[in-house]
Image (cartoon, rainbow, N blue to C red; front, side):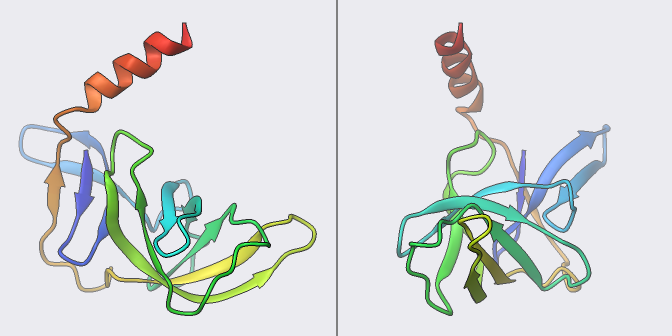
Length: 139
């Protein structure tokens, strides 16, 4: 299940008990969330490299994609967890990486992870249908 706040993405439920849930935050180095550059409609992955709870990094956006400071980053809806267009953050800095062919992008997260009081845990009503269809097509 996805976990969001009024400002945007928080993370994913990892495990639950009768009264509690453990969440893998986007501020976990093992977390990866599918993203979209809202204006350009290009896709990549959100990763956190550590150190700063206000920032994250975007991977897999090719060097030829035009990016501007302040561009909005949203979820792309490619997973069964997050639907499209949930806010994540805005582009803080970017530079072309000629070794990888992808840009090194840092974003400012919309969610202040040092000041979270309430979150929403949301279950997708159609995720099992999507998983079944994907499984059927892979056989």
